[in-house]
Image 1 (cartoon, rainbow, N blue to C red):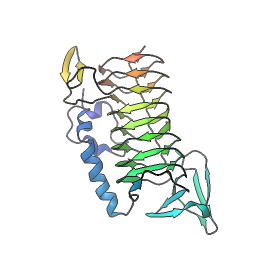
Image 2: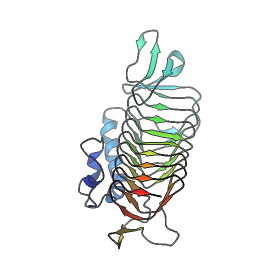
Image 3: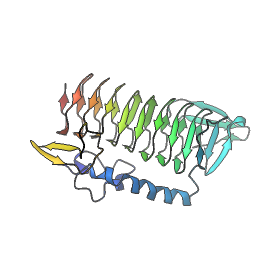
Image 4: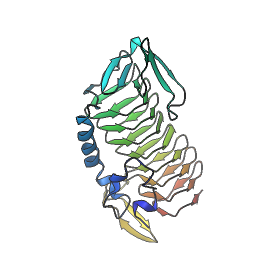
Length: 269
């Protein structure tokens, strides 16, 4: 009931190994930092990690292509659907297939920022390392990634969305004005504008999770939400610390989800 496979189709996501050995799905959060650092060691050997960011907005576009970083002035950049691989970088010698673009005005801070293929980072976005950003993912204007963020393929971190120590599995989207702290979004999760995933209790102590009417200690002082595959939230909805929604659940607009495990296809008003 509480295992990762009860919430996620691990055969469909890029980072299934994060959940290895977890008997309770939220235990993956305790191992997230270690997993991110281990993944970075692998991609460093392939020369795919960006140089240390200095926190100063980029003066010009950067093109990331096959382990190289190129100045953007000589390239024509056009973008359709990022998730469909329609980001195009073209110069006089042809198209850079699979190139990623970090636009002028974006801010990179610290070490350990890895960008996949076909990624677009828009002006005004701030990314703190470490962060792993999967292929064809879109980081929109004014997004804020606060470190230890793990994003799969075809994800969206939208305008004024803040993400801290959290996971987006493939095709997860938080398009507008969201907050995610210490949370995991499953495959094809979509957050309505203004969704907030609270991660810290008012009172001191670990976050408790209600399971079948019994209170269980999560072992985590900070624990936001686990949203199973294809969960959708409405605009201005809130999840309490320790909310676990089963696959296909709906959290309606302006509603607050109580802490605890909610079964698949729940409707929360």
